Image 1 (cartoon, rainbow, N blue to C red):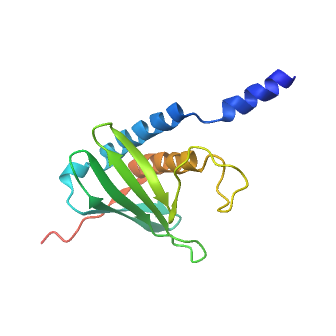
Image 2: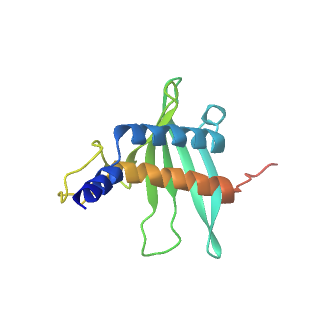
Length: 151
């Protein structure tokens, strides 16, 4: 019985290779949704959210051959919830995309001690990147493009 408990604990831990694999998946999803080399500064689209649409704005802060930095901003329609803001680094040479900041918080370590002063979960960095992966999948399936004035 003890062996099973330890097996479950070890199985639930996320390893560095799991995180790197997630970075690679996020890179592929991001490139499919948003070909960064073809966009100059900003890309906007809508996501259905209940009866209304939430605006998604992706701003490219820095674009280079090897590393790009972008900010993904989602406005929340509910007054009681803050807007979502993710800063994402894209490593073109390694073909990886990493969430570096989420709603103003940065996280460096793969695992955190818990409890901690910022009340981050044990695998906060992994959770941010899982969220990005699920968000990109949702945006790919349900996103509505915004057509700017074409006069």
